[in-house]
Length: 296
Image 1 (tube, one colour):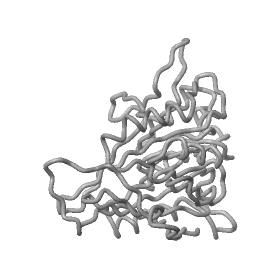
Image 2 (tube, helix red, strand yellow):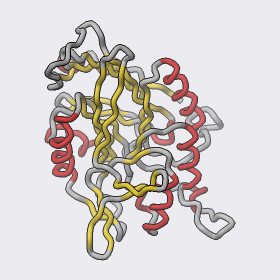
Image 3 (tube, helix red, strand yellow):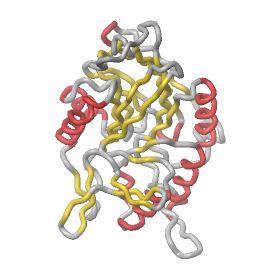
């Protein structure tokens, strides 16, 4: 598996993204930065390695996560959609007659320590809404999506996830706080979004740009940085970055091939499908200046 280590040195504005993060009454040391790491992958249909064991494999990703955690405990792993379907294993049936339908993937992702995911269009290959709900509830990781609702009886509701026996709405965004051990902190907002591709009867899509813009406007005053967890095609990622400026990075999926570039001041990255590659985003945030630096 290849790790992408490309340094974004095109220009000062490309390397540093300004954030309005001044906190009244709080004194920060301008020489102290808060560093955190995001392990990003997308479009995973196979658990085992490919190409005779030379590429891919979620066991390798689990090892990378452990290594990154040792390097910096401020590390999270995110998945930009497409993991429940399609796969050969997913078409098989369990002893009770129920289709496996992504359960094998959820179990492995739980074991490897995935933190956050958004839906991909292939999650809605599961035409039985209750079966998808079961997979969501089996997930030890959290979901976020801003533009999808569950349609039921002519009404629209947020999707839900049962956590510790309690049903809670899948949020349009997640806020994660990282600290450096010296009192310096950074609050990071994560917005999930998915393209309106699979038209399952129980799924209703909101316009991508409108939903993302409204979610960003609500989230931005609460955090220091905003990142996108996007399952869109490349053109949609580029357009969304233009329409909603200020997002530090789009960690994308759907296209199945590695890519990295800028749209306006937003970094757009996608890894190869089936974890033939992953992205490791090392982000440094300075609370005094409100600037962030990304090394991927």
